[in-house]
Image 1 (cartoon, rainbow, N blue to C red):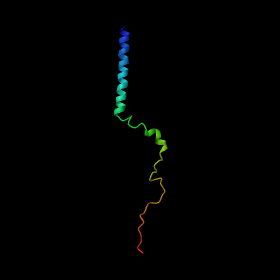
Image 2 (image 1 turned 30 degrees about the vertical axis):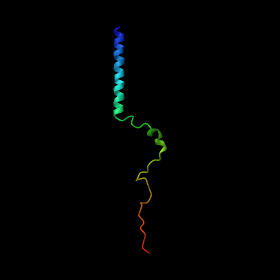
Image 3 (image 1 turned 135 degrees about the vertical axis):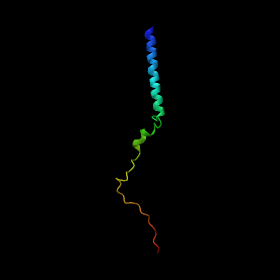
Length: 65
């Protein structure tokens, strides 16, 4: 009979441990966005300013005729 009480106590301790871990993960933002990571590979990568070799944009003003 004492073994059953020990096993129930251990199982409750493990269950409370997992509940605490879940609540900590939920509060720290682990489950905020579960859709974007699965489709992130479909988005185009942003170009870095250093790796971009395009000339700088200049404003074209009309010259008086």
